[in-house]
Every structure is written in C-alpha cells, then in structure tokens.
Length: 243
Image (cartoon, rainbow, N blue to C red):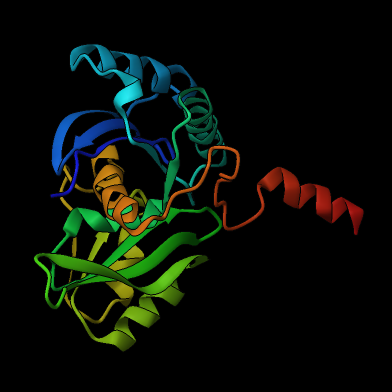
C-alpha cells in the first residue's frame, strides 16, 4: 500500500499568487489572490496563513512544488526564491511544474485540446498544446504534450490548432488580450475557460506534482532554476547595446 504523501505548492508565475496543500489526492487548503498587490508582499503571508489555518507542520511535507515558468520574470523569481528557501531550510526536494502544464491540468480528463495562453507582450504568447488520454491498465488519464512550452506569435499557435482540427479550450491571462484575434482566426470549435479555471491555481500545480513525485521527477533546491523561455527586456536591451 502506498504511503501518505503531502505536497505544498506555490504559484506566482503570473498575475495570480497561490499556495496550496494536497495530501493523498485531497486538496487540504488553497489560498489564491488575483489583485494589485505584488507577489513579494503576498506570497509569504499567504503561506503563513495557510499554515496556521490547517495547523501545517512544514516538516511533514514530502516535497515543495512550484510553477517553474514560463511567466512573469519577477513573479517567477519570487516563487523560485521562496521554494528554494523552503527546500534548503527543510531539506525537502522540489518538483518543477510548467506553468502551462499546470493551467492545462485544470481540465484533466477532457477530450478536447487544451491551449494555455499567457500574455508575453509584443503579440506573443507563452503557450503549449495538451491533451488527455485514458491510461491503459490504469485508472484515470495521462496528460500528453502536443506542443512543448514556447513563446510565439498568437497567430502561429492558432494556425497549428486549425491544422489539428480538434475542439479547443483556452485558459490563461492571455485570453482578454487576444480574444478578438482568436475569434477572428480560429476555424475549429473553441471555448474560453470559466472564472474558476481561467487563471493559475496552486492546487493544480500540487495535483500534477503528485504525479511527478510518483515518477521520481524531483530536483534539489540547489539545482532548481526558473524556466523563462526567453530573455527579459533588460537582458535584450543589454545585448542590443553590445552588438
């Protein structure tokens, strides 16, 4: 019989700050805020409140999961620093979950294509394409990546979805920015995720991290690095001046 497993998850990769605890397939607690305050002001207080509310002893956590990117450079750095600090202090491994995969995991079991889109500025999105298939000989579904996380022009991913010819669910903060472009260019049936599923949630990160934990996909706090997918604006400007 499989032993007990408890995962603490953090997501500060986008506009949302979120923390959650999942134990043995049950969501014990989640604290999510999508408001004006920066993650540097919210993430640790949220974690402390969550810890207090459920009397969480951090030493009992098996691993710390985090949305490892892509996303906001500042948000990713804050989440990374918080997770690394906890991992080092508690001697716990980290589980890196793609922000996009976490968003897609909201729709576990769906027969449709899942396309997370996060606004990456300059008409680009951080995106990928995911699908779920029933696992032979196992209960439940496995998530498959049809398009690896990337930063591309919104029209390029829409062209790819048209070529695949399957119904699509869009999720992420890129929807308000690119909704008109999607409606104008997409030729397959599609839908936009509803309010309770259209932004990052640490609960989804934790649920997917539990799968990764069973697969042994762990890293040490020292090894972890955020996945930015592209250079920051400051780095691009510095390189342009060096040319």
